[in-house]
Length: 210
Image (cartoon, rainbow, N blue to C red; front, side, top):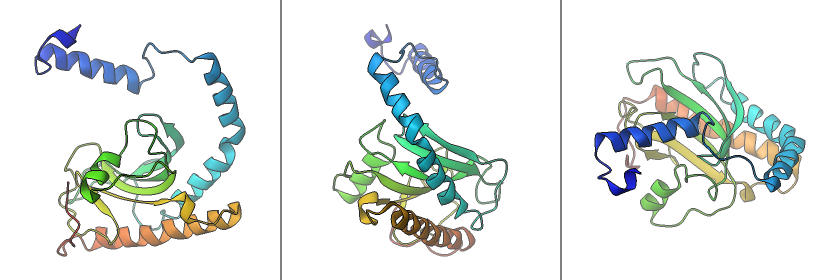
């Protein structure tokens, strides 16, 4: 109905916010198609190895930051196209309590794109559709982390969030070896991020904030 009206009108914004609320809480009007049941059954059968990997990925971060509250266990986010876990950090003078550290698997060809478009604009190159592992220090509000000024090498600053990723194809094709390499990558990047949290008073590197 609102498509015939100026989207800046107050009631149009309310309709859009309500739609987002329904989608976020799984209350939209779309029910699964017949073929979706087969996909769900296949995922149920295969979820445990993914849950194990992502849980261990987050375990590598436990020593790199203080946390507040419980771990949000690995779960699908259809909007972001991710399977990930995250946990909130306590508020400091540099960021509020809505700041969280997350890690998991990103499928750039699914969902609404996650950070893909912002990265493409920054790098002036497309983000491949291949699955990736990622780390993020983020906040639900744009530019909420501006007080953290030091960006670790190889990380992006996107609306002040910290984000880095690596293609799964870069790791060994053998599952156990790949898992060890992924966990080592998470630990290495987590250590970089810890340094940035501690050294946020230092001048930022060349990575711009977008």
